[in-house]
Length: 376
Image: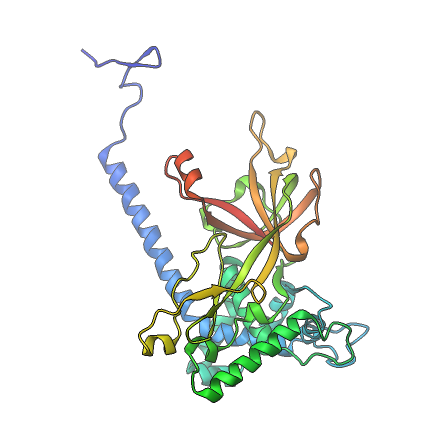
């Protein structure tokens, strides 16, 4: 007699849905392990290229020239040096790094690799050429890391602010001058701690953002074509805005003042939530074996603005009888209030996970993360 199972009010015969053979299960597990092993090997190879590519980011920002009809009066055809000058003068909030320019720069560097970078990183010339060949794919598949690299390169190549501007004596300038005086006073008194010696974070000193513009040869994807291999990559989607939220503040750098050693402590916030510091981590408090009480200073902290929106795939991308898929998009800085519900847009951003709050994890049966797009 065959076993019969009562399921949803009906009788289901197990022979109709047979269990897969054991050999097929073992083959699937072996294939899964080989894929994971290959991904680990590729990640380690990409990590070896980080030092020289980090130096190339700075060389690109400093030396790339774009021939235009009207050169900059100070920097000539150096496109990104001119953009940095406008950002320092607080006339520009976002510096867009065009990947078409990076691709053109890569073709030049492959033909004539920089000997100084090869000698500084102690690598042969052929290895530097191979790293440059992989640079574009690394940027498009590991975008968040290269956003940080280009931001550090821009901070290292910042020109001096032009005189005669109306915003020279703003509150941010006053705070930065006060911070420099405090650091000089601590250095003179011999009470320099590790945080003060390192200086303020670059996000606190600068008011601009770094975003990427995709290559012209890159085609837009459908929302349902995004897979697990796209996590952390730069994606380009054709979609429609369904809903937008209100613009909200978001803390980027929190500053604390120690009441014991009089030090200023900085904490960079990368996610939506953070745990406030309770004890002073300065070297002076550690030497005195004291747990300095920290007081958060909102006046000297840095806040930004962000907005969330829900986008949905286009109607022509939905198969017959299917349900349109949607995803959350996070916009920050000058991208806020740039779209309205009902707009058909081409979205470029980083496909990344975000940790859900605890009360939403209970509703989703243990799922701790959800995917979103960080708009560029």
